[in-house]
Length: 314
Image (cartoon, rainbow, N blue to C red; front, side, top):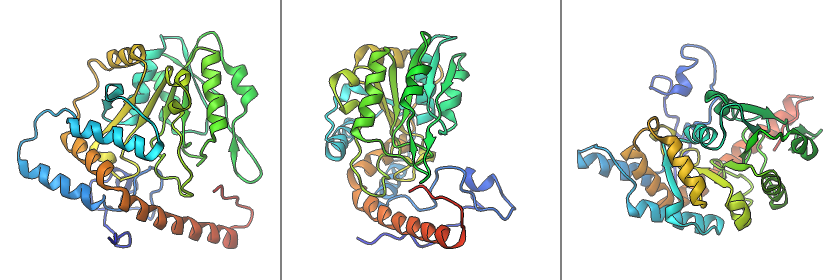
């Protein structure tokens, strides 16, 4: 089946947060991870069927959706998860904030490696916790690496959480199994909860396999909260649907308790879209990746020819 990524959809006159930010100005908004492609046809069709139902009350994840997540993780990452490990969320950012509240007390700290998606830097501070930063180191080729010695030194007796972004936003790094193992070992060594945002894992352009950090070993899994969502891959961020995978029952209980009173009910449209994307979106995803590779190559060629002195990190 052919998919249309060429038709330009007018979002400047829509309710798009991305495009409204610079409304009326000669600016191409590239400030937020929100694609300008329509969602997969299978998702749109599933949403139409849900609208036709006509009742939009409070919703819970259906067993078929839970099974779709379990099947997807097994198929895509060779990662076996139990349905009981899933905690549903209205987005990854709420997940980061819940984790900070759940696993650290006021005055305790989370460890972060910037440059990084800004909510990583604010999640702990939003609830009176502290943020400790250990910047990634950029090489001459623009590729960023972890300063492992500095990361080790940065851990204090008050550090409770290690925030990981894998693949890393915005530097575009995928981490090797060896690197992920070092993150896991550091968390085990210092008794930290490892909170891993893996929302971009299905947009790896070179199609390298993604390894969930929790899949490395039972020991790492026992201290890991993995945050995932269909929103970036299938362009569904406005439908506000994500999930945490937490195998350890004690961590899961703390996480759920920290959600009480301020995390809203799940969006019924988001739940439907999530299931349709995971079950039927793979042909569209493959076509999307091919299209994005072409865009990347066009950009790399332009930078090499027209912008001397600028380094583009693949």
